[in-house]
Image 1 (spheres, rainbow, N blue to C red):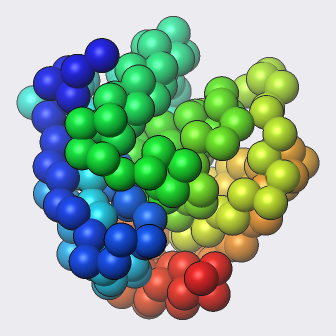
Image 2: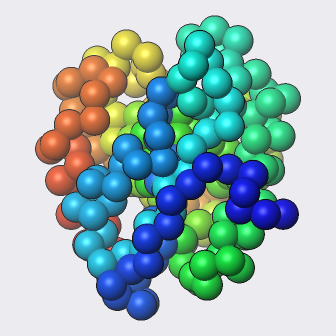
Image 3: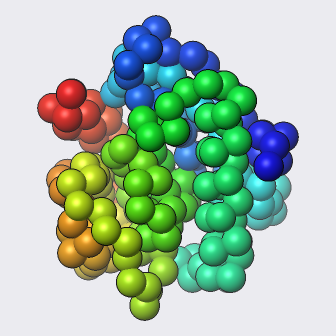
Length: 206
């Protein structure tokens, strides 16, 4: 598979041992949206920003949905495999360590990052998920023992109910992941304090 399958941007890191941060935007975003966030959370890390291949009324997404909060599961599964293959191809093309990749996703991007973890063991070294949902139900998750995961969420998020966030955390923890949850009261917004909490968490993993 070629990296030409997904529009993206790659920036080599200043620190050779630092992870590559895989940036996955929310609905309507682009491969550039989360660069500032990544530089705040993981200074010196390489950056691989990716744009979703699905268009919803002109807004890029990583997979189709049938309605707000209702995913097209067949498309999600296919797009998850597509993204996984793209990461493998990007590692080969740009020469970064495929085993040293952190996901950094917001909303729709966080959902497909979670889907990758639901489908494949060792797909990430760690993950930072801002306002994610449960991508799929009824799956037996792979062994995620020791995988560090940060989840940022809104207690009053109108798109992602608190019980949804807690269910995702429970599923990941049940598969062995080391999940840290951070709560805000700013709805579905990704706030500066949430970003700062993610940065502090990431630094604690070093």
